[in-house]
Amino acid sequence: MSAPASDTVAPASDTVAPADSAWRPQASLATLRERARMFATVRQFFAARAVLEVDTPQLVNHAVSDVHLHSAEVSWPTPTYATGRTGAPLFLHTSAEYAMKRLLAAGSGDLYQLCHVFRGEESGPLHNSEFMMLEWYRVGWSLEQLMREVDEILRALLGAQVGAAAQYLSYEQAFVQSLGCNPLTDSDEALSACALALGFDAPLVARCGRDELLDLMIGAHIGPRLGMDGPVFVHRYPASQAALARLDPVDARVALRFEVYRGGIELANGFEELGAAREQHARFMSDQRQRATRSLAVNPLDEFLLAALAAGLPDCSGVAVGIDRVLMLATGAARLDEVMAFTTPRA
Image (cartoon, rainbow, N blue to C red; front, side):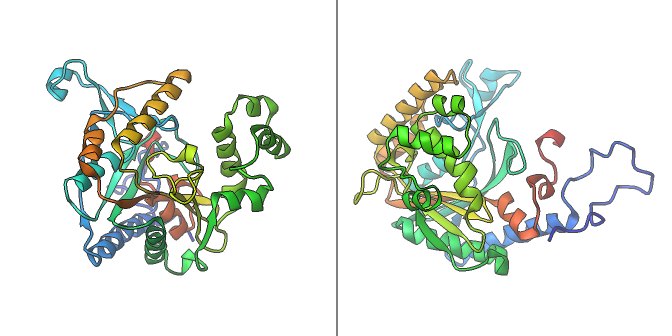
């Protein structure tokens, strides 16, 4: 359960608080203590497994290319002094992934990081433009091995609240069982008919491409019903949604990617990582073309990452977990603003 409202951080003095109390923390003191306990548990978990904690920059030289993510650009009064490159912008990272992969290519071995990440156009009960992410990579591990470790850390963080034993469901199975349509074999017309039957507006469906339709259906109808008893791992997403994941060598229609749901909330996104620099470059260029089509900002690619991949990324699997959402489950909170000291509007 959430901590009682009376257990909030007290004012600095005995004076009467002003009518406008927006300065006050949004999370209770008990919740802030639970957040600190969770961080300590994460560090104990990985220390016991000899996984290296790292700290990489949040301010980076390259924006992300993914069409679904929006990087925040940072302006400095003296940009040449700040960046060393006249007119070159800096960005707040949307994930530590690129920097951590550079460390992996340099021989770091297994590593993890707890850090703040920043994503534009994300707000609501389960979103804030700045949030806490736990990301880690295991060298030589398969997708299945990493999924099992994600289950282990969720149990360490949540205890009995994690619920029943984890379930593993392919993306294809999730659609077939929940909606009766197949994301891998059905035609675009059949998927559109399925979306219309679910109540989506016809103009919206007409504007959507295949992957956008699938995202709508899993986001609004499948995901919110998953993990009511315990964690559910949805794995092997369509190849068109691979992002930075390898394709399955057994079935090239799907990528070695998974997401984790508990209580209808998506908690994590993991990959068996793509190490081929040329293939990653091609995917980034595809992203750029889509961004241009959608009138989104098109920025230079991260050549540091591509050079690291060309130098040799070891076979590995990695995952990013939204710690604030895990904290919601631990405290019984219904919204992110109940577990954050200050959300962006009050930062």
